[in-house]
Image (tube, rainbow, N blue to C red; front, side):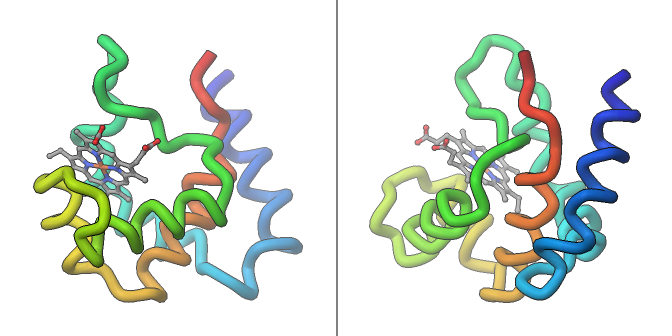
Length: 99
Ligand code: HEC
């Protein structure tokens, strides 16, 4: 079910969001993120699936410029270019949010 939903989101996205961030590249980059962000069973780490692209991009830039405090995310964001962040935004925004 989940796989089907992801595949569906992916297909929808190719027409709309491709010009901004490359979701395939985003998926590649996301392998690092999901070690933390998909094990958020207790709800302490927010899920990234289904986040709006704009919201995601502004949060990542706030971490990168250290305007948001979390040291883990600052380190993660520091290594990402604008293109990387756009690609991740395209990828995560197309995923089905958790129930
Ligand atoms: C080592 C664990 C870890 C890794 C790896 C990690 N994150 Fe995070 N991330 C966190 C934690 C913990 C928070 C919550 C910070 C807080 O509440 O202040 C967070 C918060 C976020 C937020 C803000 C979410 C919100 O709703 O406020 C975004 C966006 C995000 N991470 C994106 C990413 C991306 C993209 C990657 C991969 C490039 C990544 N993270 C990798 C632990 C991690």
